[in-house]
Image (cartoon, rainbow, N blue to C red; front, side, top):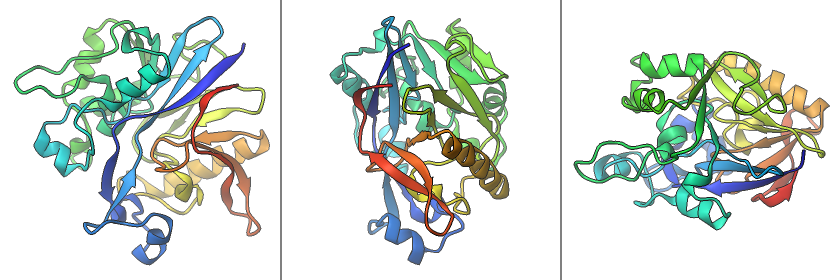
Length: 289
């Protein structure tokens, strides 16, 4: 089956660099990503749009969206008030009502907030993809319903109920989802948050894996680098080693949701034997997979 791929930017944000590079000193991480005067670094919230030859449209993640009221938008460094993802999807020829499947790696607000309409004072939260099936892992849904106090602020309390009430939610426990079909493989990771689901899109030039928060961008390809937001840093390192080794053996690529400059990169080992980014794509603009 032939597919076309687009990287689709949503609302950008800025978060504390020390939190994003939890075990790395500022002297190191600031060389990779320069902070502003408030110690924040720019982060993309990038989705992947896949158009199958049948005409079916799949959207992998939705970014942070514009559901926050102004005070929370400022707190979490969200840079635009409008729903940027929806506008950029239309530039790729896809309206919200055209999306058939939305795949969510996990339900943290910077990955699932784009499911919701932009903030309107006094209005209830509302899903914006009226036809789409929603795919989320069983453990990610459980975590969203019963978060630990350490990560409670990362979830949207109403979202799990909204997804279930839609009647279009598929909860996945294995490596394939019915809404996607067996061509798409799902990898699972627990180090950042329980049940994070990393979708693999097949291609003639090797597989493309949506890296979620296991590898948010090129800087995190270096296996020992973890985030302060990760629930278990050592597990993150082990999971990265496993996934990156597998992709290296198969000539695969990673799709980055948070890298501010690059959408995808091929995995390689550098002269020191560490994982690194090889060929990079600043964006995917309808390329054939």
